[in-house]
Length: 308
Image (cartoon, rainbow, N blue to C red; front, side, top):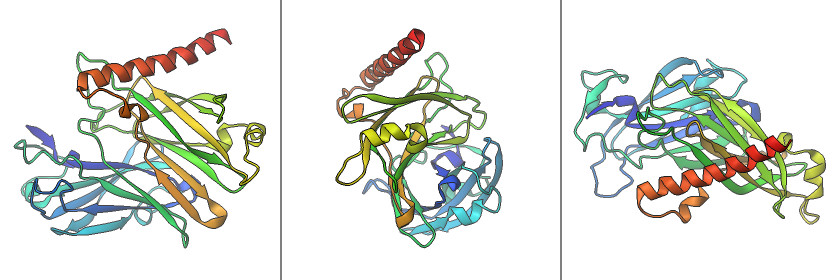
């Protein structure tokens, strides 16, 4: 099978300059599925996109020897090229032996074994300069947002109860519109809402996310201050909310970043689609159930729009 070498193992990462955070990525040469393949040396690369989604550079990070892990300072590299705004980067790993005679961008005929690198996740770490850090691991799913001739487009349904706001703490939902297809040109129409602990919808909006860009949604900007105050816990001063978002155009990757700037503290979550806990095992049934769930949320909000 022909595979672009850059796509064997890749992880899109939101650079959140607007939050005042530094970002680093940790990459390993070891197979996380024990016994599947021996560790080998990898070459690491970073593709850098501008805030508007244009690719501005691709840099070689260095080599990861067999049975080793390395941490790369993404902020130090990207701020020379993109300063101040939020934007997307993608970390790539390619086995050194597969690069012989090829460029990283090449499509190469590979055996099924050589093309199988599922679960090679990256550690993405955010931190305040001189402060604490928070991290999360994930990777690009196989075939992510590639063309689907004769099939409906990919979709997104995300929800999490890990959204919080107070005078000193806030949560940012970072949304990435990314594809393994370099010619990808889909602008995502993403609808989202926040719900209070009693189930009341307290804010709802839609945003457009151009291809290869990041959209950062701060709960303190999205939800009126009076509403946050109404549901604030008197004991700790925190307002806990649930977040739901969907997109019918394409798949979106979310990160949930909670910050306490005065404490120089940060925590990061990558939302596990909650519906996956109850989805059937068969892939075709999973797709049907997810599609029905997305349609249900869409019908609810589209009905509200029509009434308004």
